[in-house]
Image 1: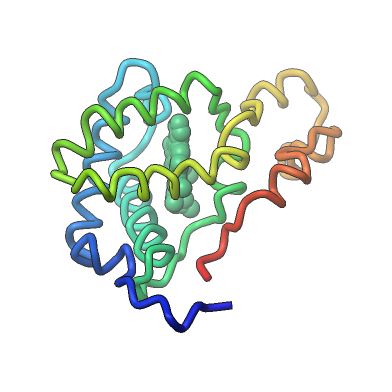
Image 2 (image 1 turned 60 degrees about the vertical axis):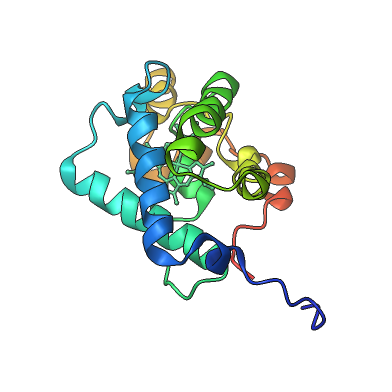
Length: 169
Ligand code: HEM
């Protein structure tokens, strides 16, 4: 239930709205792509897929932070299932964000924790999936259109998904 006495402006407003959030998303994507540990996730990204990922990331952040964008991307489970993001990748992303992006973006120190806490909530539905290709290699006869679950690999496990509030409230 919304607390009617809470008059704190939304994070969207405190960050300055759509354009600054778009710039933040660009910085995060660029720094992640440039990084030697996690950059490989974008090895085969096309220009078009990158544009789309950026716009979806911006709309996702704006919507969750109190803006009125429409998010057209996949939910966080679908977006990352089969990607093979590990704990090490995860930690690295946050090093990149904290050591590079926040400074470059000039994010006020008191907002860093809030942004960090938001992003970190998604860990259970981003980290730990096997790569889709590894599943196909282990199951040469599988129907690749039926998903990992068709060969008994359920990711994320139900409790992980339940921990994450994926819809903006
Ligand atoms: C180490 C951690 C992460 C890695 C390596 C990663 C990587 C990626 C990649 C490569 C894509 C593009 C997928 C595609 O083009 O189909 C993507 C999509 C996306 N990611 Fe992540 N991601 C990570 C963490 C996060 C986090 C913490 C968030 C925010 C909660 C997030 C939000 C998104 C969104 C909104 C999309 C767009 C989905 C769509 O276009 O349908 N990611 N991610």
